[in-house]
Length: 131
Image (tube, rainbow, N blue to C red; front, side):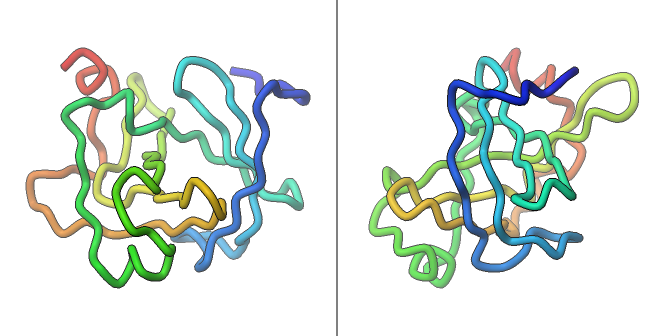
């Protein structure tokens, strides 16, 4: 899949702590299509594919009070939730354990860890979309 160089929807997102395994905190969010987004580091060194949580109706992560306060969230409606997509292999998988939570107003973000044994770090995306 080719990421367009010009996107209809592009917004800066600033992580308050770098996402796991990365050093960058400043990203641009590009809408690709139908709930699929790309997060590209402001310095173009890293690109992640992410899916908006609204595409996964059975997914409703609960974040801790500390993370909510750090992001300045007063209610769930203040947040957008995304999950990281790993397109490797025969079927894309998503990490439901470590969603990216973005404050809708400030565009500040955190990747949080959800302590729930029912969630998978390699959940098949197709099965979640069909649910």
